[in-house]
Amino acid sequence: MSLTTTPSANRLHIGIFGKRNSGKSSLINAITNQDTALTSEVAGTTTDPVYKAMEIHGIGPCMLIDTAGFDDEGELGALRVRRTRDALEKTDVAIVVFCEADVSLEADWIGALQERGTPVVAVINKADLLGNVSEIARAIHDAFSLFPIVVSAKERTGVKDVIEAVIRQLPEDYEKKSITAGLVGEGDVVLLVMPQDIQAPKGRLILPQVQTIRDLLDNRCVVLSVTADKLDEGLAALREPPCLIITDSQVFPAVYQKKPPESLLTSFSVLMAAVKGDIASFVEGAAAIDALTPDSRVLIAEACTHAPLEEDIGRVKLPHLLRRRVGEALAVDVVSGPDFPEDLSGYNLIIHCGACMFNRRYVLSRIERARAAGVPITNYGVALAKLGGILDKISYR
View 1 (cartoon, rainbow, N blue to C red):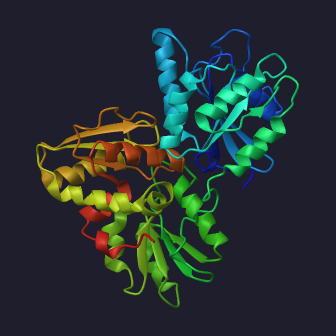
View 2: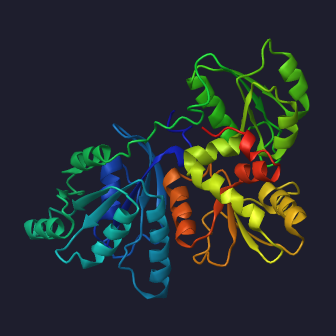
View 3: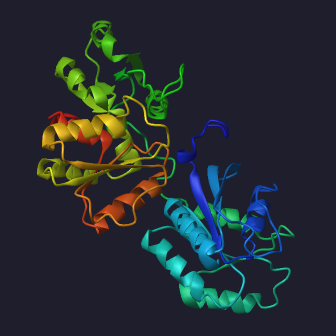
C-alpha cells in the first residue's frame, strides 16, 4: 500500500514519550527529516498528542505520535498527561526520550508500557548539549535493563540507530494478519453481500468492505459482490455454491436463510473483530446477552465519530434489538471515538464496533480494561449473530 492509501489504523503506531523539553519533537523531525513537529526551547510546546502519518524506509507506513511531556503541571497539564496516557494505549512501539539521570518519573511510564507488552526503545537526546551522557545511560540500564541509544537530533547523529532499533522491536504479527486467513484458499469463490451503507459517502464503500476485498484478492480468491436484494441473482450466477459468504452483519438472518448448506458464512464486522481484537473474548462475551435484564446497563462503543443517522447500527438498531429481547427499561449508553469511560464497573455488557478506525493495540487495551473490570465485552457482528440465533452457525477462523 502507498502512503496515501494506507488507513491510519493499519499503520505501525510509534509513540514518543518523555519529559517536557527532552527533545521529543526534535527527534521526530530528525527521524522524518522534515519539520514535522513544532519545537521550542520553552518546555511544554507540545500540548495534545500530534499524529503524523509517514513512510519510513525499513518500517513502511507508520504513525508517529508526538506527546506532551508526562511531567506537565497544573490543571491543563493534568489533562495533557491524560491524553498522553491515551496515546500510550495506541502505541505499538514506544520511544522513551531521557534527558537526565533521575529516571524515577520515566519508571511509571515504562512500567505501564511493559504491562501492556509494548516494546520500548530508550533514547538519550541532546547528546551535543549534555555533559553527563554516561551517567544517564548507567541510570537507564540499572533501572530498566535497557541500553539507550545516544542521539543528537540537532546534528542528526544516532537517528539511523533509532530507526533500526524500532525495526528490531516490530511486533511479530505486524503486517502479517490476513483478514480472511483460515477461511479461504487460492481459487476459492467468495460472495460478498454489501448493503449500501448510509454512513458511507455516495459512490464509496465502507472501510471494512474495501479492506476485505483487497485481502481476498491478495489471497488469490474469486470475488463476487452483490447488494442484499440481489443475493438470489448472485447465487444463481455461480456454477457452484461459494466457499464463503461475507455479509453485512445487519442482514445476517436473511442471508443465513438463503445460503447454500455447503457455504461458510461470516460478516465484515466479525472478520474485523478477529483481526483487530480477540475474537474468543468477543464470542465468550456475547453469552452475557442471555443474562441481561431490564435493570441491566449496556455500553455501546463506536470507533467512528459521526452525526447519528436514522439507521445507525450502534445508536438505533442494536439498542432496539436488545430492548426488544430484554425490555424497554434496559439502559444503553453510547460513546464514540476516543471516549471510553474510566469506570466500567457499572455495566453488564460492552458491545464494540469492528474498530476499523483503531489499531489493534488500542482495541486490545479496551478488552483488557473490560476484563479487569469484570465486564463481558463483545462486538457488533458477534452480538448481531447472537441476537439472530446463528452465532454457532457462522465462521470466525
